[in-house]
Length: 336
Image (cartoon, rainbow, N blue to C red; front, side, top):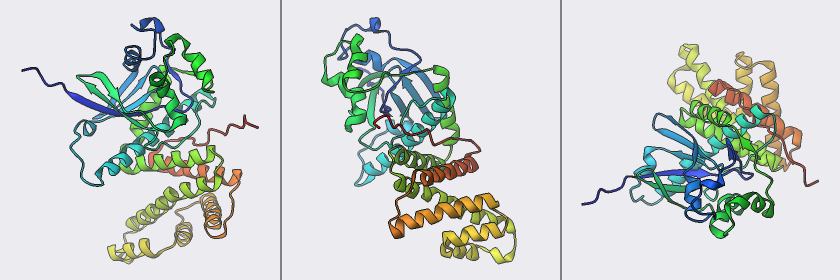
């Protein structure tokens, strides 16, 4: 009886602009001169970087595909009602966290803007399947802007050595080459910053806020950025009460305070208790007022106000992870 192949799975995505990992592919390696099978499979299997952190693994392929895998993806029982969507949410969060860490690390190292921040949804991500470690197939991403990076291989019969011409044809800039060292540094930092689910979610929300900023949706940027800021303030309040050690802050009192205090009151309390510096207090108060003005008065946020919210979110990430992760990689205004 033939041995049953071991099935493993991964989820992945492409940046909108795309990149070559370490170097452009060697087209002479293909058995076929076309992107379609077997040329496509060979490019997919050309992994430049593969790093593990416990059970988690991230691989980057030559053509800029970034793939994430863990054992839970391999064991895919028939999901009950609603579980599929919870599963998708988990991996969209992981990939968004990976995207913001990669973008921030690479653009900081190279001091040049290579990638536009964009929010990954289920339309951007796709699943891949392997049998005994050999790539066997994948589900295509559905959003056209990102899908161009991969759909062109399936939907065209362009010779592999014409890929740069094809990028130009679909109005995409020439792909930059990102070194193996920079890719490895980004992945290692991702592993370091996402040891907890809370930090993964924080980074995912940071990527969404940065994506709105990059898309010039400044009000949405502030609204998205404010949620993790607010969560952090509640955590600071609880931490302060836990450290106080007085009977005034028993468990019932802590729960009441955390539940009933408004964010404005928490900011005032933390500043009064010297848990916030004057600079932190001023920045938090300013962004909070802008956020409230957006919600209640229909205020349209400015470029500067959105940038301030991202800067504040950077300080939250630093406080939670002890790592500086710049979020503002700039906005392209080439269209103007």
